[in-house]
Length: 350
Length: 166
Image 1 (cartoon, chains in turn red, orange):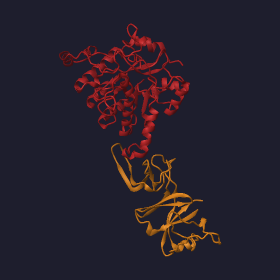
Image 2 (image 1 turned 60 degrees about the vertical axis):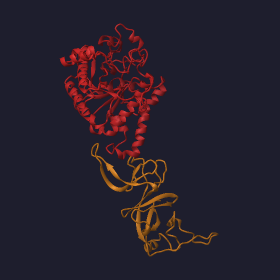
Image 3 (image 1 turned 90 degrees about the vertical axis):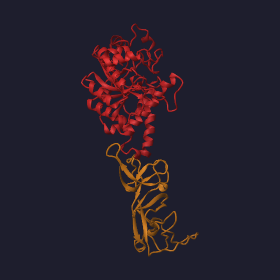
């Protein structure tokens, strides 16, 4: 199946370090980073040497494949003829405690992305990273980027300080809906809380696997709190979620809604409805065996061919060679995933 | 259609409920604020008897965080999984197209009128715990090997009558 014209909805640049971002900060914050010695900031997500963080063959390239727009294009956009790639920067600014510091880094990250990635390749589109420590500052950052059509979504992490459906976050959704931004919720954490409901796991494998449960939490919260009732045009994109957890989680949510829906009377239809209307999922990683019949069953259980948006999750190691599409998708499904679904989801993707 | 005499009106006061078997199927008769309702007693989900379920009101919302509560006591909730059924329509709230309770017409008739209409004969028992007698199942009029138990008929009272379709 040719990938020409595809929209890759989740790619990652090599995560910048503070020194990369300092040129995009004002004099106060440049000084502050120096005075505080804040020249290094990372979380336990995507450890530098973990195989998941960048595919071995892409790591071996000089420069490595995620180091620049040119390097990425050679590996991905030029090689396969993608129309667009949406660049999600995973600098862990959500883990700062200080909202002002978070806002300074968010502004710098978004300026850095526009300057060093979006301006270098006309096919690239960007995600607005938000200082989620402050809803007000997050809204300011959305307003600041709204005039730049290259930014097509805003980016939140799947594990933060509170479930994202709570009304305190709604100004972010109001601003996103108003300006046509999709809201991407990406694997990741503020690491202000353990990544599981039972405390801190021991190993990285547990951390990464636990992300799927984080998506359960956010989807349940967004639906139950009524975010999609309040903002019916909002599109939420679950990025790097694994996808195949969705049918079983929705079965559970729908089952319990039938008996205790009067707790949330604004949810006046099966929760499945809101997923079909408002929620999309990026393709990679696709937690399904490499078997066409099984893939077809999962697609059937998803109940709609509109839900999945093509993504490579570049440069994370989610597939080998060029096998970025699961076996067993029909030609019509493939076309929707590669092109039609992304274009229907991203209002700003001109 | 068959008419089934359920109970004297005085035995179903406001707030009372009575489970009866009509033509082999359990039916729940309710007196809600003086209004009588009769519906299938079998939850279409997993078959629970709804007779043990609580009656609540109906809640909707104009937007998230609002609660518009009405029709207090007219929503019957299954004791197993708490699905809500509207006693006026039999429809479930969660899946009204596929999950609904059969509704029965319910009325009050005087003993005299029941006799005159042929719904019951003087030899029938209009009141019987966990059962009733319908015109279509009229007691034997001929001598048989068994002696049926009979009850005194109180034609001076008014009775709750439930209809079943043919």
